[in-house]
Amino acid sequence: MHPLNLPEQVDQLRSLAQDFEAMSVRVRDVYYTPGTDALRKIRPLLLRTQYLTTATLIRLGALDSSAYTSIPGSQASLECLASVVFASSLAGTDLANALHANPYEGAPFPGYPADSASVRTARHAEAIPKMTGHLADAVRHLDLSATGCHYVATGIARDLTTAREATTTAAQRKASPDLSGTQYDALKTFSLGASRLYETRPGMIRVYTDSGDRVSMATYEALAKRELVDRDTSTSLFRGQRIAVTEEGQRALAGPRPAAKAAAPAKAAPKASGVPGAHR
Image (cartoon, rainbow, N blue to C red; front, side, top):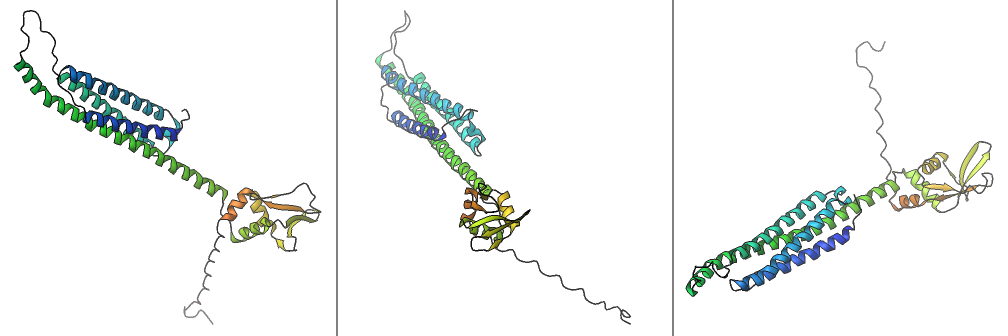
């Protein structure tokens, strides 16, 4: 699947919706006289509608072959855009039907008399309601196409926002692991930049602040394992290696201090047996 600029696709779909809306107005307001005049005025409407159908089909193909299909909610957008292709195709068929119902006035076969004025008037009177009906259907299908494009554009924008929020939340959860109150306090102390690792005697390493307070080594190791803290290894443990809080640790500190867990209720002492003869 190829990468696709989805925000750009959203803009293109909204522009396509506006084109369908403009096309609907043109068809609704077309004024014609049956015959050559009708062909001259309806023909460009049909060609433009076919162009919009092609443009919609291109948008559908681009989205269907892109990474957008892996985003939750994309199926509804693709199905809706396919319905726009269908509706706009019907609008083109409606316009073609209007041209089919249009009475043309060419010369008859040799030996046949030409239509009289009364016959032409009757043909026009019969064709006008049919053509009007087909044009009204085209307007309805063009309006549906515009609505569908707006819906898909909004859906893609919503899906992108939802996916972005989900990714951010997952990153925050990863960067802000569950800490105990003691670990949070130690991380807060380390963020002040006044804590060091010392080797007090061979094999014995302790954590002290510059004020002489001690932090549990187990707490430091838990934070270091999660890459929330780091130490300056450019100095020796004998002189003391300064402890620093990493970016992940800073994000963990941005959250509230974890609430202390409620202590488990103490088990009641077993009652003395009330069986007669238990005490002599």
